[in-house]
Amino acid sequence: MGLTWKDAEDIAMALVEKFPDADPLGIRFTDLHKWVTELEGFSDDPKASNEGILEAIQMAWVEEYRSR
Image (cartoon, rainbow, N blue to C red):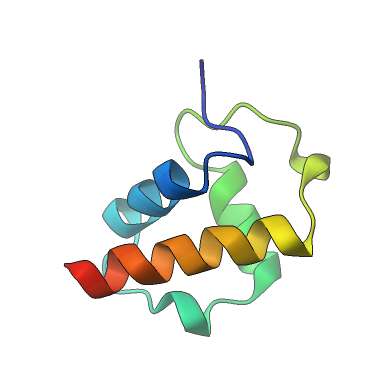
């Protein structure tokens, strides 16, 4: 089973690996959406996201980013 919009923590870990130098708070939601849908293993409907989902992913990414 692939990544879905509900997998904020797993998506955040994948984003840290793929974009290690990107500051999650400096990423526009339009870019975040694109990056998530292009992750290897992402299998959810790209149109099923919303601002709340993207914000949850961004906050999980911030936690991963700060913890490394």
